[in-house]
Length: 222
Image 1 (cartoon, one colour):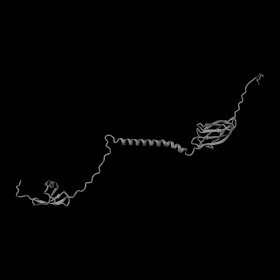
Image 2: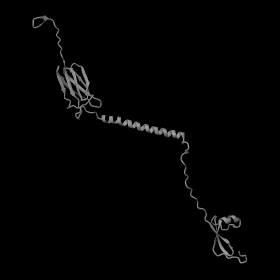
Image 3: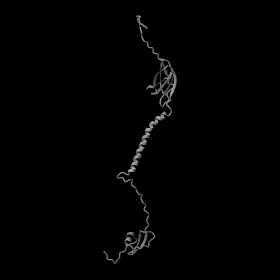
Image 4: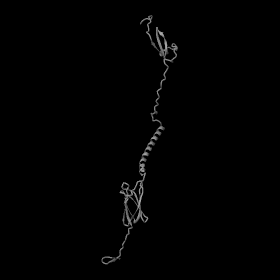
């Protein structure tokens, strides 16, 4: 029953809400003190219920959890997980100090990220090599292009063999003048018959005059 200032009575409904949760918040940091974005924060309350969210751009989070003791875990891909405990009162606020427990990168995670930068370059190089090998194989099957008979073969210069040295043969006297005949032929054959072939003797014999030629007085003058 409800009474007003004038003693009037009436009925009214009163709703009493009991809040049994408290606020847990904090900021996830790396070893340099920089905020870590998109880290997953999980809090397991005393009633067994789990509350979770991911950090925003400034690394902060805020969760309403069931009052009492709780455990918390923070994870992110490429980082080592961190965890701890805490407590919160109903309608109270608990701020987790995570400056002493920064989120550390896992060993090898940097190398793994670098590998993703190297892989595209390796694939590109292999692609270029494959294209070059394909073009070379295709050109080899098709043969040389029209108008191109392939590489020009260059013959090595032939060394001429040294021929036999000429042989000096005594030629008959002409008008009382002594002559020497140099015959192109094989050395050691001075007894060749010079009268057998006058034409060859005329081509192969060089006369060397070793004395003055006297005129024949019996021949008429010019």
